[in-house]
Image (tube, rainbow, N blue to C red; front, top):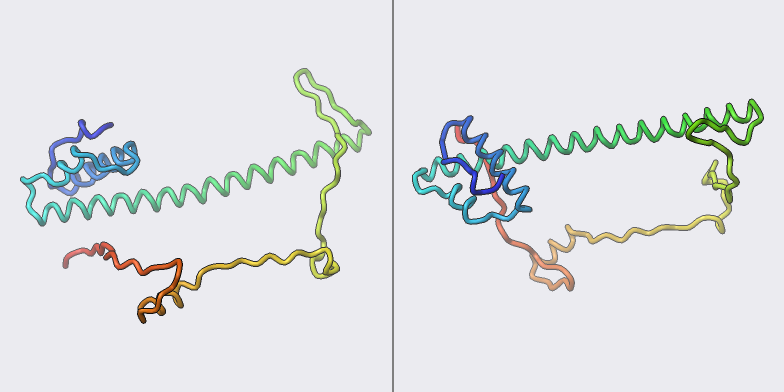
Length: 176
């Protein structure tokens, strides 16, 4: 869908939600760019300021719902990936166990051949505390102290490499 296919603006909740989804689809295809058609659609002069506000808020609501859904799916996909990785590991261990039991270094099928190959070895740490210091590496993570930086900037002190962004954020609330 492109911005040419956006329908006329309507004001029912159902229509607003459908329009919000269409706008999201177009914005996604346009990589977030708001072109003239989308801008005109949102700023349709026939809509009152109140209706425009509601329309924009519905769009924000719908985008937030989709972000939450994607985050949930992201976690589901991550879990599914981990489950499959564990299954692969267990499956490979079973195959290796079977090959050792039947004393075979290679199993040949019609399509595939499975066999052992020599490796350089893999280090397994059994007890980190038991390792001598010369076999440990200390990793240091340096992060900015944003609270301290903000306090200094609010006091008017210069902080090289940082500035205070005073751009207002958008607050959305439901009217009572």
